[in-house]
Length: 76
Length: 212
Image (cartoon, rainbow over all chains, first blue to last red; front, side, top):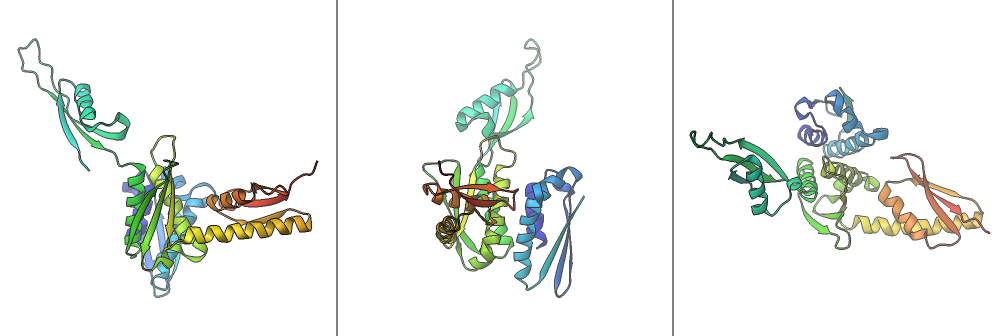
């Protein structure tokens, strides 16, 4: 999951060194915090949150693989 | 990918020689100047040639394929990609995914494959000029099946709109699915179609053709 999201976010962001993915996992849930540079926020969220929605959908697919629910937060 | 180190009297000269050898244009390559060279002074100090490294940039097609491969491997799905370029339209590329566990890649009502497709389009076209490559992801004939479903739905709803004498609004759909609805009903003289709302909640409307 970590690698997957890091790969996606770095492919979209310009400031790749400022991309940081933090995972908290228990037996039911995976909480994911994505941190990017301020100027990259738009590239990760997108108009009407379209990109963020796509990232959440893929995270959900990856989490369901291990029978878990995923929650994605995006921060500066 | 092959890269080329080229020397020349000046940086520009070296770049031109390299492009000629690679048979590529300047916007298709990445150029690194390794040595700016020195023309020497009146032949007293020895002149040193300029040196550049020229490497072909990954095309949008290559970027798209690489992105999908990486994503699927990180999702833990083993698969093969068959890339099909549309002969009639060089701006379109279809990637067919083959392998086990395609259900995971497709997702409920195609949600996951649509998300993958959307991100692949963004990544393939990122930092490129104005022309746009449209990438379509398909797995196990999902797009064809979905297309047939949408065409049937469109015809059925057009009948219903005509029967009830009022317009009908469909569920939100991604652009490529809305296109299918518009296409199938464009020859139906009784109705007209258009889209309303903002992405990703844009919806097709089937409205009655105004009678003269």
